[in-house]
Length: 150
Image (cartoon, rainbow, N blue to C red; front, top):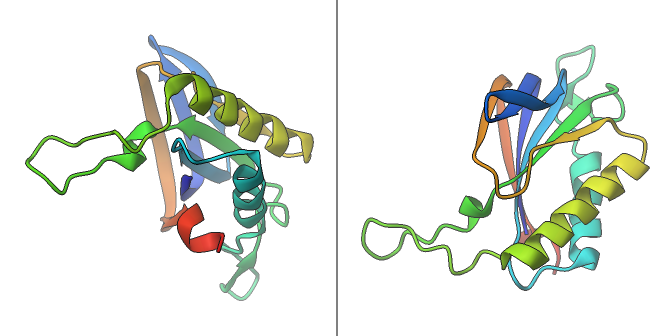
């Protein structure tokens, strides 16, 4: 599982020209799911995500978590995080999770984060989405379950 986390001052996702999710200060999280992922891995990734201290404190140090700043989350399914570009010029996505399983796990992630009291907006799984953001910093972090869960 991969989470590409961007600290934002605002972010919006549109489908067919209509806004389906929008946040202010918080995280835009692009979520990539592989066939080997499960809810246990998702729980560990969510825990890491919500404990990330990448917001600045009063001294300008990145010491604050999303909870500390009352941040919001916009969570977007992004199978292209599993693009394999080692051969040729056309990416392969064979490492990405099968759509039914990936959607189920994506919905689990949304539900879990929301149940922990965070404002959680989202895109539409499998849709052609247009995502806009103002990256604060810019600050972007990749969380990869292969590196976090050992």
